[in-house]
Length: 456
Image 1 (cartoon, rainbow, N blue to C red):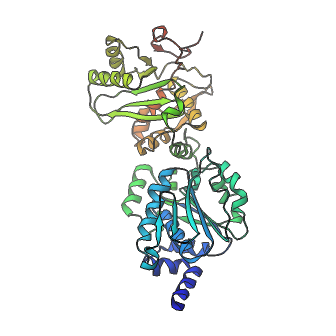
Image 2: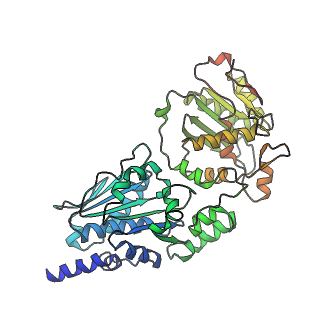
C-alpha cells in the first residue's frame, strides 16, 4: 500500500509521469509542457493549436489524472457542441481509461456526461457551453476544481461571464484550448489584452509528431503559407482577417459550431437556393434556409438540366418550400423554364442585376452582404469543409463610386480556388424577402435589383 501511495503522490506532482506510467503514453513536447504547467495549483493555461496536435487527448489525460490522483475533486468540462464533448473528448477518455492499471480501470465509470470511480464522490462532467446554456461552468464546489474548456474559441462570451466567479475560485485550475479561429472573445483575449494572466502555448503542426507532413503540405499547396487557413489550421496562429477577405474564417467556424433544429423555426419561411451547373468540375447545389437554420439538401455534378429541374421539384415538395430562388444567369435559366412547365413558380435571380442595397454594386454582392449579416446575427451552417472554403474564398473591392464588388468566380479560379457553388446556393436564399403569409399565386417570378417581392 505504501508503494502504491508513493506512486499516486508522484503522479499528482507530475501529470507527465502519470501519463507515461499509468497510461503507457508518450506525450509530445508540446503536450508535456502544458501538462506540467497545469500541475501547479491556480494554473491558468491557454492553448492555441493547429489541427490534430492532440489537444483533446491532452484534456482526456488531465481528466483521468485529476480523478486518479486527487480527493474531493470536480472537473467541469465544456465545449460549444455536444459532438465535441461526447464524440471526441469522452471517446478519448474511454480509450485512455481502458489503459489504466486494473485497480483503477475496473472501477472507472464513464457515462454519457460523467466520469467517476465507483464509490468516490469526485467526478468529471460534460456540459455544452452555449449562449442558450450559460450556466455550463457554474455551481461547482470542491477542494480541487479543474476547469477544462475544449474548442474555447467557439464558446460564447456570456458563458465565461456567467462562470467568472467559479473560474476565479482560489486554487482552481483552468485549461482551455482551441483552433484560434476568432479574433475576438475570451479565448482571443487570453493571448492578447489578458495575456499576463495566462500561461500561453501555441501547438503548431510543424512541431507536432502527431501531424502528418502530408497534411501540412496539402494545406500549404491549396491555400498558401500566407493564408489565414494555413495560419489557423497549421501554425496555430490567429487569423489576420485580410483586408480583402469578405467573410473571415472566424465567422464561418463560429456559425458551423452552432447546432440548431429546423423545428425551432417553424414560424419562418422555408427557402431553397439553387446554384446550377451542368458539366465540368462545378456542382449543382441546393441549399435550404429556414430562420437561422440551414442545410445542404443536394449536390450533384454532371446532371442534365431536365433531371436537375425534376430534382428541384421533388425537393420543393419534400421541404414544403415557400420559395425557390435559382441563379438564372446561365444554364439555370433552363431549369427555371422547365419548372414553370411543371406548374411551379421559381424566382429567377440574375447575379449581375441591380442591388437592393445602396452600398453594393450588384445582386450577387447584395446577397453575400445579407448572408454575412445573417451569419453575424446567429445563422447556423453545416460543418462542411467545402462550404467553409467557399465562404472564406471570395475577396472584394470598392468601385470608383464606393460600392462593394464581390470577386467574380472566374477571378477566383485564376487564383487557384474553386467556384463557390455551395456558398452561392446559400446566398441565393437572400435574393428577395419571403413571407409565408402570401398566397403563392400572388408571387412574381423574377427577382430584379430594387424589387421587394412581398412589398406593397
